[in-house]
Length: 316
Image 1 (tube, helix red, strand yellow):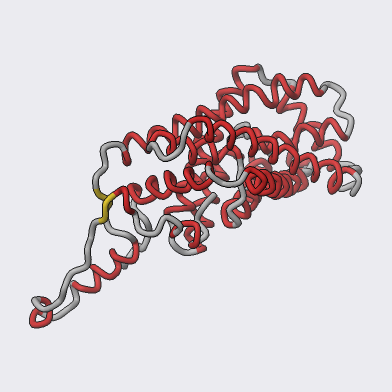
Image 2 (image 1 turned 135 degrees about the vertical axis):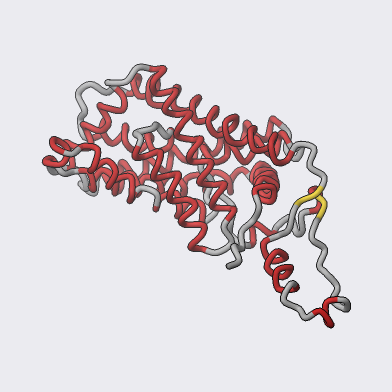
């Protein structure tokens, strides 16, 4: 059996080039892409809330219902990654690797972070207010009560440092989902690679700054009594954002850059070349001598067409 996937070295190289591409995009395109990502993730947040709106399970099997909700949430990240929309949490890994690889200046990385954050916020609030709010999607119980309860548990119950630590774990897993999404060559492999780490962070109750842009404002919209805008900024944005930056930029991006890309002169086989190389082994002895083997390595600085990964639809 041939497993046709990119190697980890190839993936981190693709992440570096993707980060450079993203960091040099026109800011209006970055903004619109980020708005789209915020909207798509908001839909997944809404699905998770409606799935967990089961009072009996909340009282008698809270772990089971949270696991079921976590199973459906990843479709949001799949839509974002497969349409190349820009989520700020993914940008924390992509652009960090590009900067460390000297393909992108720090200033453009920070600008990209700021624009994607604003765009994600705008897209999330649009869905919360226009689609969910005026659409009365969560106006009736048990959906209204679960949305308020969920927001309260996210904002009021935990301490600041708890949210920050959960934010680290969250984007560590989210960026692994981006990593695995690039590693697969076919659509099914990408979806599975994205799905599993995303399921992990939701099932563990970690905090994602863009997901919170839906969960918490929706709770405020529905009249959560203990949540204010100031509390949301203090405990819903600041610790989660810092934790997500650490988890994605350091625990994932910097680590894999250091392990797989730093001081790297060559890259191993591409997925297609690996399959082609395997087929050469089946050539008869009489033909093998006359068969020219493919170039099995390529320089790290010339990893094929710079737009190759973009054209294959593997960017986050």
